[in-house]
Image (cartoon, rainbow, N blue to C red; front, top):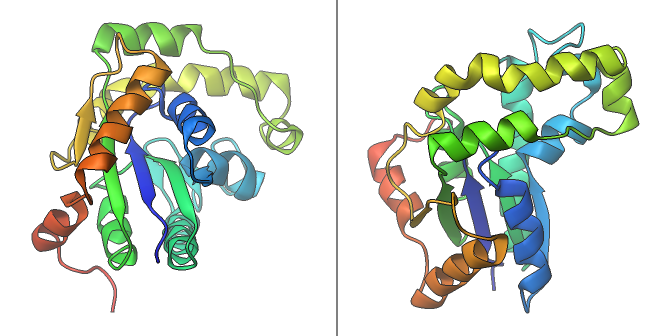
Length: 217
């Protein structure tokens, strides 16, 4: 039996990381945590990240190079493979339509159960969370960013890229569950996800596959 996937989408500051950790802690089944934060922050080599010397090939907040897109394709395939092996997963993500991250994900997870959740706090709350956030990075990322100065530059990125993210991160309008996380505690957010899971399988990915053609053979 395939493992359940709970996929959380939303901008930085929407509560994805906290929700993933809280949900995994609350769940009766074992949910492994994976997603965009781990991929970009740890798995993807630092030179392909925001201030690395190969950033054009990799990840930049508003531009995904071929290495970044290939790593996301691999991430989607890994999550699907874990589900096929019977492992439940909770995944944080940025499900952009442009670049076509969502289109790749929905098809690579075609045969596994996915509950697609959108976390979308109010603009005022999002602004406050991003402004007050303290960034903690693994040593290899700090080194790749050029030390503490690079980390400070990274902290300035959310404000600089916010208009782009507002347009792109929430361009999709098909989800199994949408949550305004502005005034909810992490446990309350998880309660809503648990209640939706109890109602039955997610259908958003099937609807999205009707909307978007398969982007690979």
